[in-house]
Image (tube, rainbow over the protein chains, first blue to last red):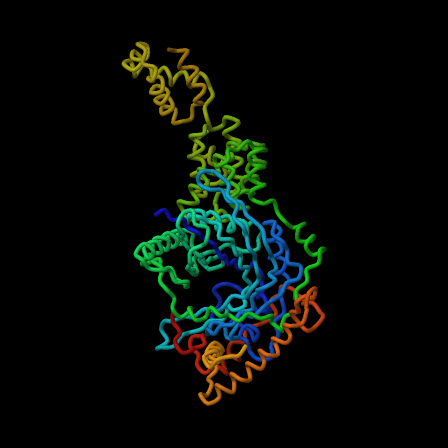
Length: 476
Length: 95
């Protein structure tokens, strides 16, 4: 039987605020346990949660960027369950009236086609604390620093049909929240993670199959592997005559499998009700317009502009607009080099990204600044160095040996355009290569390349290749 | 609608309440009465009435995004039954 996979994602993006969503405690990552957990976060009696304005602004910003409806009247609700990482006995979340309503996002698939994935809603909620199960002689250690951290939970429609589509959607949201500067996107620290709802159905069937929810996927690789594993598991169960149980499953990357989280099964009855501690949130039109005015150019618009204004190819433009930081680096190089967009795109996507990747560095830590790269490109354009020598210059800049001019001078890399000097080298090479010259004259065209190579080598790469070609042909 | 004993047991479990065996039928009766009241309310024509999320006719005040709390861990942990390495210790919970 042919099976169709149906996937919906719930993405949790930690909002990049200074303080918690309902309290004035800090949310700095990596602090000593419980040093950022105040009375509100601990759920002590008599405390009152007060909503963080910045969290509201960030949620609205996301809604506007994705063309979602903005819930101008929005309600916080209590989601009740007992777990020691949430000492109140409930999580403050949103249920009936979320802050962000329906919208959609375009994703680009591997074959270049566009697919629209519906966004059901995005709501504000607080994160829970962390449980540490080791080292406490049969007890569990609880760190409540993370309790109360603002999250935007972005819920998609069950529109994705493969693990790859799910990853493409997640990447798109990941890039977007960073563009909007509402989330740092750090997946290792858990600032951006997702749960996947996965089901299968016979191809052509309209009704959805029973779904399983895979929890806490915090890398693009894991989400793809976890979904693919889960799809195979479900198909095996059904084809073996069994039925799928609606349940929560946890992905174990070490064993590469998903397994049932039995303890959560009973907890599905969350008994939501409006939180009496929080009044309805009303968002005025003026607030929305003020947020709209702060929207940056979004990735899709930027990509289109890069293609049109700089004449870049689609894939180059996609790479360069992958993050706001990289796009801005590229545009600085273009400007400072006097508009050399194609060379800039080339050097940024190949040499710069290659070196960053090789050394595991972030763009912010690059030893070669945009201005330094621009100067080097100027030296290619004004024929001071060839593209080949430029690679040496780049490597030296990367190693911290100074800017392009300093390195060219120090290493004597200036390209030679003196005809007399080049001719002298050509004569020497020709005299030393009688066989190759004879072959060339007998019609072996490719011997020209060999001879050019020898000449460039003899000039230590400093001869201008165009000049060498021209002079060599004259002499032959 | 009237509640069975099993409903009361389930609600009590979800709320982590211990209910004495002999009290269950009385709770079931009392809770069923509340359901009766709700049923009466539901019979009222509420077309065009916006659902109320809060009894006050007011909107939520927002606070500025500033860190205003300092570390008071030692103070809070004085009332905790058990702590270690800055963590609150609780009976083991595992998935």
